[in-house]
Image (cartoon, rainbow over all chains, first blue to last red; front, side, top):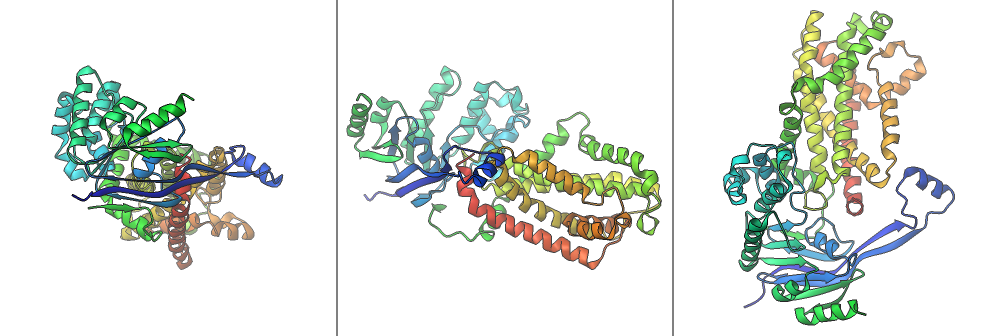
Length: 247
Length: 273
């Protein structure tokens, strides 16, 4: 059976020109320009990263803090356009990155479900039909007409998770393994995540939990300083990463 | 199936306008959200957003009434003349700064989820327009006090609102670039906006100005928007064909220019958010 590619990244590069002093004020920029002190340096957040992910596969990205893991995930999520190279993503993407980022505390839970789902690329009409089911799954049916500023952070997280995972996407993006709400709900959300991963969608996962990475990944990319230092078989790549860390 | 290809060629402006159109469901939700948060959830509701322009008008009326009341064109009464000006400049300021703020703060989502940022600029301009239309109610009351009724030219007023929406959407995209690049640009922009307000004949008639000043003021596009609005809504001003030219052309230039420059800058900007 041939692999149905969902993500194709070739030589993805993200370079910024930033000023050496990291100035961000107009005053400082004006002074530096007059004194001809504007020194720029090229900074590579990602440098020539190539990989692909097919339906049913799970690709994990590992590496130290600041290696470019989250940046790479944002490139796949279409938030950051690469400055060089090319990325192709096919189908509906569910980015589980900082869940609930689109929530407005003044709106009710029902209104937020519709807004968040629409931000994630579904239609408002479709979302209105899903309010009940989503609230039911999150266990928040009784609080649907309450502005979510009255919600606890656990309740908000449950609502966000339930909304984001309401539809099985073609590509699931996960930044760190999720821990949402109380123990019961954590179990429930973990089960749903696994169910989605097994349902035949492609998964790109960023994680520090190397045991989980070895267990669930089909392939692993080890990023270091924006460069894919090694990629391939999970056990091999994780070993290589651990060897580097212990050095 | 939707396919994202980072190398696909995008035609600036056209592709951005198309994506706003494709996401009109989200656009409508954002407008409704702005209005809901502002009106439904506050105790005095609609009056809250009118309080600022009405209070400003009251103070200005108290201070400047005796100076300008006999100097207006065609003997127009001062109060509706003034209120028209305050409402229109509020529309401009609100659309401009709300849109730029929404993008500069990432609207909470621009760095997490793929959404075209232009939608936030458009929704801010549209909800400001709706506030403006609500503000026409007290203006109608004020006109009635002076035995004037709104004219039959209301479609013309809608045209002013449409041009203003395009104008502020384009400009707020440019403003958001400044906001993101420079932390101190906000205070500078506020100085500029204050200057622009004084350069718009909100509370004074342009006829009292010296010939040279008058020429400079006429270069301010807001002057033309205001002249047309005053004439077409309450007959408390005069407008010429060149005002119409200025209004239409400035809105198109701001819109196309703003979208074009923004599309070129955004890939670098989003990394800074």
